[in-house]
Image (cartoon, rainbow, N blue to C red; front, side):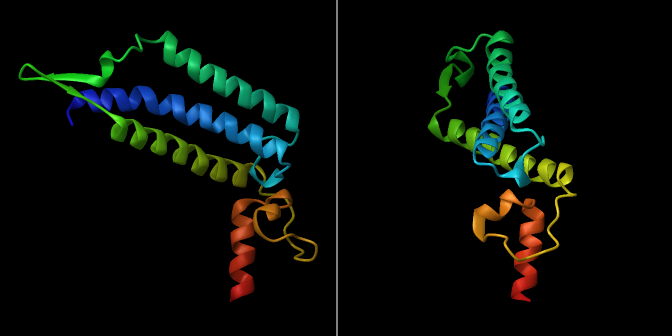
Length: 145
């Protein structure tokens, strides 16, 4: 894949990354998963999420002509189309990166959430209501060891 794919990738990736980041913040605030939020107040998570989603789409459509032409490359007079595989791979890279960024940023921001007591802490995803992702992983590894 020539430079046209990478041009497409670097245009589409930020759209997916920031809109996924916004959706994740809205979802974790709605689910009350305090260990994954960027802000202590859910209303700030909703505002951040909305701004990230709207901002990503505004940036995407305001900075260039977003018709199907960027998905075409002419190589020796032959049109080569980028298809579902490239779009899916770019989407997965952006969404996965947003999930990793959510885990990393929320674990740093919420590092002071107390995870000292194991009593009363639910198992599984519900543990993120009271602790960060890395605190939950550490707790799980300690119990197994």
